[in-house]
Image 1: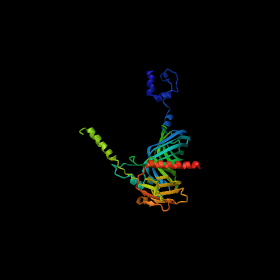
Image 2: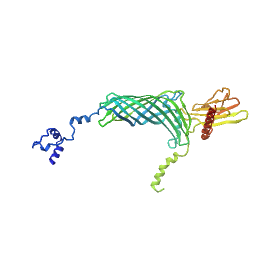
Image 3: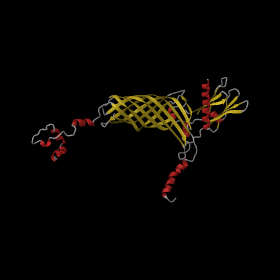
Image 4: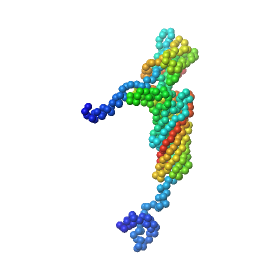
Length: 259
Length: 148
């Protein structure tokens, strides 16, 4: 038995080669063994390459690695551009859950969140930056969210580098808050429709069912409803009379489970 | 004070003590709407509201003034508008820029007959009274609709 174990450890290739010839002759009795657990070389080579194209569950997320830039108008009001209300935002989260219906087509839902500071509006900035940094009680922040459904098409779903494009539609909100250590707080929230979420990117697909790659996103939307809250009391809530088209443009790095 | 741990804690707490000195920096502007009945000189309405600080911010309120007369107030960062409902004959809304109101009190040029409407600044909003006033006005309007 000790001799057989030594052969298995030291000569796995020889054992593999001799296994089919399991003849019970006196000379070969020592290597008459069950087939070893070492995979054939061809199978091992395939495992090291990109995974095959697959269907079924797929998930992607952006782990703190994206930024969003505002363009267009929040409303058609004078000076009411999106960048006046909201500055550029960091994307702490994007999550997408869905399934590949066929090798090259994915359908799923997405949630995209951006956080940042006030925009370039000078009057808001003056309030937000009042005082000096040591004794300034005022804090300003902005949050934007997008939620919806999207379709993605993969150009090379079975390759190690897969280019893809996507289109989605959903809802969008933008919210801006100014707070003065609890003495005064005001939140202005706009809600609307994300008319088009145009995406594109490149996934580097690893054999472990994991992918990683850069992406770009253009979210076209229109705010339709607006609400103001001062010191916890809703002071106004209603439709926006003069809506405008806006865009959030994003760049980042995403990770994919089962690319 | 000779304890180094105590000294370190005191030094760490110092910025917080400075930062939490209760000083307020937002200082939002305020606008008061007052409506006086000319015949008696009695103020039928006097309400104070904040002027929103943020772009897109708005304050809307509806107040009962006298009998069927209601004042519908809308304040943005740029303008203040007061519309009168139930005044009998049609009355033009009273519109002023927020800047003008903050510079000097503004009187409505064509208020409902027998009343004087004034917008002024520098008041202190009573949020509880304000919200209850709005609720009361909404309840009255709801009751009227139900009666009809």
